[in-house]
Image 1 (tube, one colour):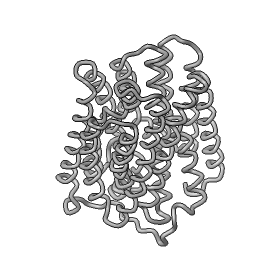
Image 2 (tube, rainbow, N blue to C red; image 1 turned 120 degrees about the horizontal axis):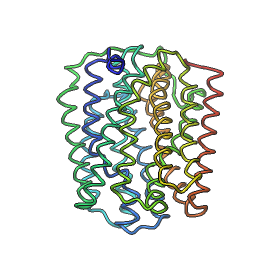
Image 3 (cartoon, rainbow, N blue to C red; image 1 turned 60 degrees about the horizontal axis):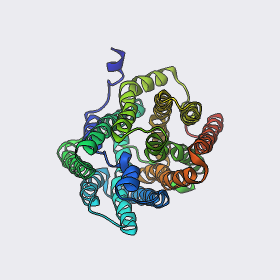
Length: 394
């Protein structure tokens, strides 16, 4: 009963956004297997794969910046539709790309379209939520993402084992286009009701807001470690632990399943207790550090499940509350720009994360890489702790 109470009070528009995000994310099977596809199927080296994954991050930066600019000018609806449809087309075409430089450019263009969606989504969530349920609104959309991610990797691993990688590109593309068409149907501006039409008194630049920049930097550190679960960690599962793609998909799907079951009740409980959002995020970053440290304890495969559980806890404690903190900051200026800067934190993480992770493994091996990454997560946790002692917005 408590589980259902945590969903009460959310607007129908937020539910529509969650549904569209679920449709889109359910087909996102390519990205978790991209590093394995590039090194195995395409025959690229770890060094080349690291650089291509950096283009993944650069495209994310470009898309986040462009998405924020366009959202402030034309509203979130058009930006989200264009992002979904164009990224779907790019996913389909990516399977036909060969060659290192062409692949770098293709991944950059793809991610530019994909991540233009995020600032628009956050602004839409802010518009369709009230002050008392912003965290739960963003959590519901994250649940849709994670439910899709639960289905995606498991199904993707199955498709690879019985068909080929090309099937992943087709499914990813078709579902993205379908999500864009659903958005046209359910969230047309003439059919929606804005709950929170907040207009800032002055247009302060997000990039000159010192407190917000500190917050963004802490998220960059968190993201550098978190995104290893989409590049170096799957390689560790395959190369060091001997798992095949199907079992890697199941292990990663466990993360989405746990988030789907527990994140909303956890967020609702923490909101009722009244813990500081920054303090909760501090514990989340600490949990992420533990998730990699314990991989060095033993070679027993059961530790992989424990590591995934700690990572999932860190994710549940960090992302929902980070969304809300960013929304609160966005009241100071152009909301699209603030939310674009928030998205840029993870885009910058992508640029650093995959490339640095691949090179660290090549230079220092997996064990020492986990120690380095855990230290980075601990630094992010400390920054959030310090910010909690001097709250600027909350």
